[in-house]
Structures are given as C-alpha cells and as structure tokens.
Length: 297
Ligand SMILES: NC(=O)c1ccc[n+]([C@@H]2O[C@H](COP(=O)([O-])OP(=O)(O)OC[C@H]3O[C@@H](n4cnc5c(N)ncnc54)[C@H](O)[C@@H]3O)[C@@H](O)[C@H]2O)c1
Image (cartoon, rainbow, N blue to C red; front, side):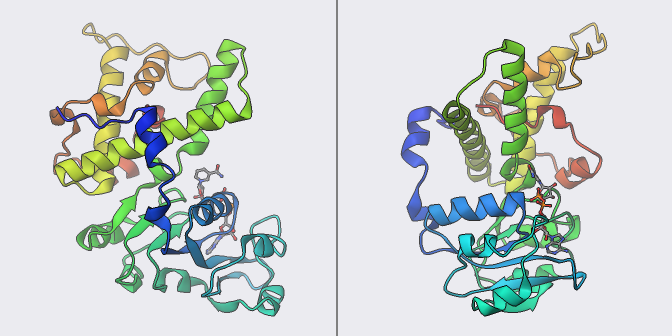
C-alpha cells in the first residue's frame, strides 16, 4: 500500500511552501476569529487578499470591502468592532470599495474562504463563482449546501472541507485535555509545533488519498475519517458488542483518543474508498461522529 509520508521531515520540507500561495489571491467571507487568522497566515505565505465581507450592525446587512491591490490586515483590524464588523465610513476613507455582501463570492480570485457562517455557498449563488477560482477553503462550519457542493465537485474545484480546514481549534482543545490528564503543561511553541504536525499530516493524508483514488476532497476527508471511525468503534466495542464505556469528561472515549493518535493513512484502501451510497453530505447532515474528528498524525 502506498502510505503517504507524513513524517516531520517531509512536513518540514513542504510547509510553508510559498510557491503554492505566491501570486495567488483570495476573497474571504467573515472578519472574525477564523477569518483574521486565515488572512494573516495566508498573507504570510505570500498570498494577497483582495476582499473581505462582514456584517454591518447599523445597516443590518453585509458588505464586501475590496481593495484590488490587497487589503491591509492591520489597517482593517484598527477599524473593526469586537463583533468582526468593519466601520464602513472609515473603510471608504482608506480607499476600500464598498460592495454588496454577496460580492465576496464573485471575485476573480484563486481562493475563496467562507469563514463567517453556515449555508453561504448555495444553489443560487454557486454559479457566480469565477472560473478563476481553484480552491475553496472552508473556514466556517458547513458553509456549503449540498446543492452547491454538487456543482463545485463538477467544476473540479479543490475543496478543503470544514472539518479538515478548521479543525485546529478542536485539536488544541484535545491537547488541553491531554495536558490536563498528564498534569504536565507544554510551552506555546510546543503546542504550535504539535498542532502544525497534526494539521499538516491530516491535510496530506486526505489530499494524497484524493489524488491517488481520484476522489473529491470532501469524500477523501470523510473516507479518512470513516476509516478511523471504524477502527475506533471496533476498539471500543469488542466482539461481545459490549456498550462503549462512557468517558469521564464527556470527551471522546479512551478508545477514540487512542485511535485518533494513530495515522489516518494507515487505513487499507478498502476502508478508505467512498461508497456511492455513503453520501458525505448526508453523513454530515445526520451529525457524523465528532469524537474522531481530531486529525491523527
Ligand atoms: N472560532 C473558532 O475557534 C472556530 C473554529 C472552527 C470553526 N469555526 C466556525 O467558523 C465560523 C466563524 O467563526 P468565528 O469564530 O470567526 O466567528 P466570529 O463571530 O468571530 O466572526 C464572524 C464573522 O462573520 C461575519 N458575518 C456574520 N454574518 C455575516 C453575513 N451574513 N455575511 C458576511 N459576513 C457575516 C461577522 O461580521 C464576523 O466578521 C463559524 O461557522 C464557526 O462555527 C470557528
């Protein structure tokens, strides 16, 4: 079996690969916690964000703030309220174009980052996505409706699905659980290093599977997750089919945590292959197991 190499050395040599992001542009929906860090990291990797959309409390509608030369993150943050809303008048003074809220999705950019809320890319607006868009990185949870997802898949846009793209937060929560269990606390750099390794390994596991098996990225992510999930259940419910013991904290049971700490790439091809009847979207809508979402490395 061709197991993707997600070792530290490979990760070190491949991330950050600025050539992937240099000369690319992005349009972002949202300017809150998720969007700001996504923008900061993307700019650090050499990308240019040309527009951000956010909610305007006073006008009770959303606007898109665009600067084709690239937004200045610090400048925009200095005129943003604590809810992630940008001051429209000040943005105008700073030379931003003020466009309708929906305009973020129509931009001629390489990457779209929906990072505001769920159900934002829909059957109605998916056709407005520019042919230039190559990647959709789902910062928000569930930003794409099933109808829109079908169109995006047909257009061969590379999707980084929500439960992969935005799993850093929940992974850190898992680290907190581990540290509390050990009563031994790591320095910030150690946390960030471990986070980098988990997230990067998870990304490569999914993207390598997608390329190898010619799968849509969301399917590959679910296949990776399901392979882990199957093993998780198998460990937690042995042949006697005894009920899974409840965990003390309400967090994933020990069996799940153990499974989560192994590489998702160690699944067999049979486990990983998505069956047509297993609609990832259906699985998501029916509330798939969050317990095993923590990316394994
Ligand atoms: N914060 C986290 O740790 C975290 C982790 C993973 C996923 N998420 C998901 O990411 C999404 C954003 O979370 P957040 O923490 O950044 O929220 P936030 O409240 O900090 O920011 C939300 C942003 O979206 C904007 N917004 C709201 N309605 C809008 C609309 N109709 N059109 C355009 N912009 C709109 C707001 O103005 C704000 O800028 C949510 O789906 C959340 O579930 C958050």
